[in-house]
Length: 185
Image 1 (cartoon, rainbow, N blue to C red):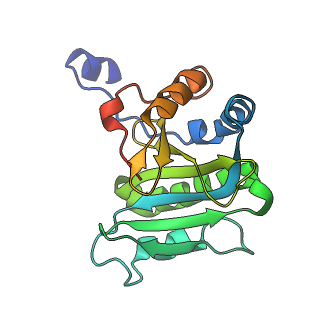
Image 2 (cartoon, helix red, strand yellow):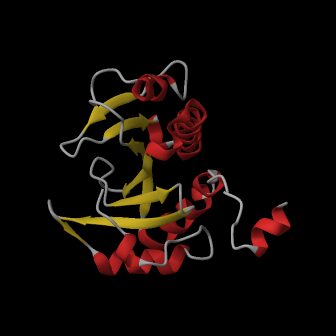
């Protein structure tokens, strides 16, 4: 049946993978050695909840309970109506943070909210100023790709740094080639 579907131009739907998200550990080494950037230990999962955000939707409850059983995630909302699940790990522990972010994504998907997921982010900062992230690596689950978002000031972005980072990480993690899809977060 799969052969018949492919002959007719219909492919099977492929379930988006979280494996590239976990591969960000390797990219972190390149970011540290090449740019002096280290993981801050914070990241987010962003989705659009059906209904009115902040009303304790099922998706928000699922997201808040994911990850480490000791530390609960913070569920917040932005002005655009998106729900943002904030996860963090002390001492910039990227391994545990990525596990937590993957768990939030997976639990939301298993609960039927996969189509609501927008992106997952991980923040990086210069070693001398870990409180102010300079770079956010954005993972788009539906595309299975990353793109860098480098802040410049309060409203700008450092496109030159973003392009350098994309070039450096292309062989390490799947990078989004279409720059038009690189949205501010």
